[in-house]
Structure formats: C-alpha cells, structure tokens
Length: 438
Image (cartoon, rainbow, N blue to C red; front, side, top):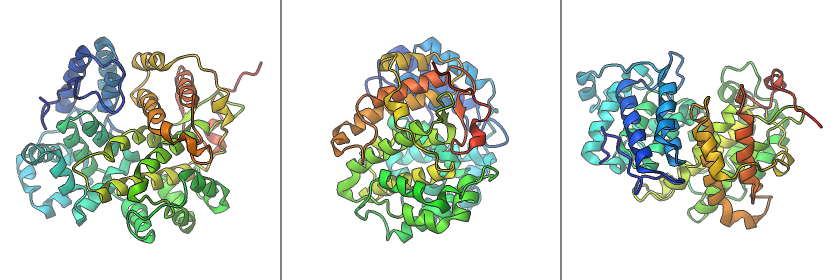
C-alpha cells in the first residue's frame, strides 16, 4: 500500500490518466527505483537548481508499458549524476509546525529534506486532500506563496505534484510540496496574482480562446520584441519588464467559468501542443523547444486536477486560468516564433502509438522529457476529441495531427541536440542541422 513514505504502484488502481500495457513487473520495478531515489537523492542534481527528473521519467515509462529492465536501465543512467540526499534535522521539522518558521525556510534548497519529512508527517496524519487544501489552496499568505512556488522552476513542482496525484502516491505528493517550498515565488506577485486581480477574480466567463489570445500576442510588436536572447530570465527580465501592460492586457482576457471547465481544459491542451509543435524553421531539421515542452508536458495533469473531489471549484478554475496565462507568457518569452501548421499536417506517420511508446521506453538519451511529451500528446488526443467540432479557429490540432506530432517528437530526438532552446530567436537555430531537400 502506498503511504507518505512508501511508494507502491498497483497497475489495477495506479495506471494514471493515460496508460498503455502497464504490468505488474513494471509496477514493481518502478516502485523499487522510485523508493531508492526518494531515500538517496536530492531534489536538484547540481548547485544551479537543475531538477532531478527521475520520478517523472520512471512513472512515464511505467505508464507506457516499459519493461522492467528498461526501467532499471533508465534509472541507472539518471542516478549517475544525482546529488546525495541531505540529512533531516528533526528540530527544524518540528519547528515547521509554527507558521512563521515554516515560511522562514522557504527558498532554501538545504531545507528540502526537512520539508519532505514535514509533509510526509502531515499527509500521514491528514491525507493528501486536506494537506493540499491547507497548504496550497487555503488562501492565506502561506498557501498563496506555496501555490506560486508550484509554478516556479518551469513548473517542475507542479509536474511533480501531478505525477503524485495521478498515480495515487502520497510520498510523491510530499516530494512535490517540499520541492515547491524550496523554489522562489516571484511569478506570483509579478504575474499570476496581479493578472488575477486585473481580471476581477477567479471564474469570470471567458470570451476568447487561447488561440485567439495567442494570435493577439504575436500581432503585438511590443510583445514580439520584449524578450531578448541575453535576458537571464526571459519572462521576468524580458516580457514583464519591457511590455508588462501589453502582456497583462492579453493574459487577463483568459478566464474560465465553471461551465467552461471541460472546454477550456481542451483549449489549453490543444493550444500548447499547437505552438510547441509548429514553432519550426523550414530550413532546419524538426526540433521542439525545450521551454515550450514544459507547458506541454504539464498539460496532462489538468485532466486529473479538474476532477479531484477534494478541490473546490474555485481552486480548479484558478489552476486552469494560471496555466493558460502561463502558456501565453511562455510563448511570448521565446520571441513569439512563427507557427507553421503544415509542418505538422505534412509530416509522415511511420509509427503508431504503441511503436512510439516502445521507442520512448528504450531511448538511450532521454531523461524523461521525451516520454512525458509523447504520453501527454496521446492524452491530448483523447481530451480534445469531443471538442474538435469547434473547428481549427479554436482547436487547431485535430485528427491524425496528434500522431504526426508524436512521430515528429521521436524522429527529432534520435540525435543530439534533442531540443532547440528559445525557438523564436535566430541564434537558437544557428548550430542545428539543416534540412535535407530532395
């Protein structure tokens, strides 16, 4: 049985939002290596705050039916560069029950093991739902800061939380909350909270689709030119520094009312897949932007979030609104690349979904980003299917395009570099292979 300190996957109950051919042997192998990772490794694999992706990688492999040997091989490859876990300080953990001391420990990676032990204790005592409602969705200063931190670090804490919730693993939820606590929360006051206030609160009926708003960002010269390649953080130092009013004007138009939740979920998934897959260069081999990838890979978990019985409707709508606004900001931050839909519609289909999953599960260089992407695409096809009748002006990705994008993802990651970084900038493509033309 899975607990806040024990990872245990059961294929009959813990197969995830989207899965293919999960097995008992795969579940055992994944549980074993994830337990070892939790007990032996830090949340960051270096001193620059680069994230340990083992949980994301292994659970995605398990969900697409990877063989035990492949799961263990991936883990062996991933663990080779991890930092060791830091010791827990029991006195610090006890002190965290004081709200002021809890907050004092924010944004300190040395406190990760203490936050992990704290949230393990809390989840064991109260359960996942009550802990999330108290520490993330309560609306007080601490919870607001935690919610902002979940979206920090290119949404890695949010992705980690999504995996924990999706696969019914309280220990991974504890990891996610501890991870969030040691991230910064600058995006809250600088973007999310301010946009929410300007929008008039949570849950207003939305009048525009994300595709409409995306097109507006690209048509806005100030936004197109707001991010510079030299910016240390292209969202903060670029977009929100040089064109804040323009960004807020568009972002605040993305709102979600209760009766729009299902439609807006599909809208969000479709839009981020659209701009991630079509941001190509005709003279270069197909590559996907590494930063856009995180918006795509995190989209799958919202299919679960909006159905959680213990979250209020306001919390669900708020998550959707923040995610949609983040996707718009993320697009602008990479210099608003041109989007070429025919790069998708004309791409050949060489592999069906099972073949794509098999290739992901045995990819020798993947650290989890590729298999996460392909699984999120397969989920997106399911999530958007019933809304495709709204047409390409709302759902630009439809039909066999999902499978075509999956093939693009696999083919484009055969050789290094696997990804392009900041695709809207010419410099990002300079050293990437040219496209062969017959």
